[in-house]
Length: 67
Image (cartoon, rainbow, N blue to C red; front, side, top):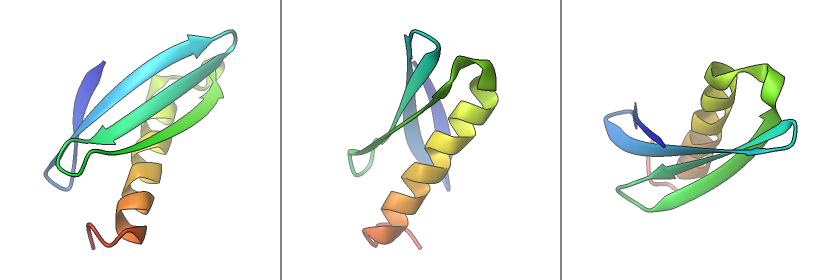
């Protein structure tokens, strides 16, 4: 588990390997909004992290929690 920032927000990332797929969960600690993405383990941690954070940002914008 690791922590990152999204526009000054604390985001917790969690990685789970399931065979050759990695499931990435990202949670915004301020709103407790959580999203999950998955990708091939061969994609690398940087790409998986980027995709999860982009999805979290999309969901937060859609809910009107960030602009």
